[in-house]
Amino acid sequence: MIADMDLQVWLATQERSAQPALVVPYVRTDKDAHLNYSMEVVKRGAAGSSRIRQGGSINAIAGTPTALAQVAVDVKPDDACYIEVMLRYAGAMHGPYRFDCPR
Image (cartoon, rainbow, N blue to C red; front, side):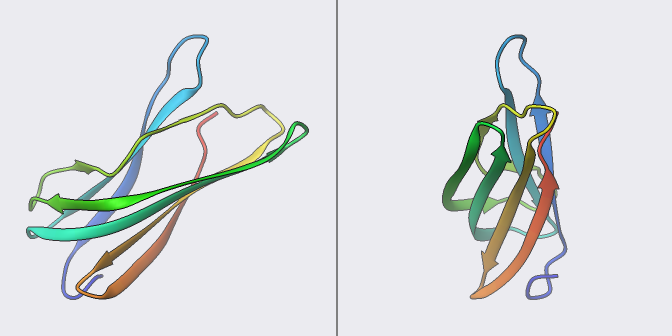
């Protein structure tokens, strides 16, 4: 819980034929809030490793899912991959929320 705020964070994935999956993290709060976020995708596999970071701020409206960012992720069967989301509200950090990459 962030400073008396109830929030949920989840990933939505759009599969695209012959292209990497498009991953979008969402947040929903129980009250209007200005949130800062950071998202990091970390992938390790036979082809090497990569790390993608995005960050910014959003104005979340109570009860409404709000997209934080989007990133295309191409994960091979033997790759290790995760997505981590951190949030900041009223000076307090919350997270990390960690998700496995879609396969």
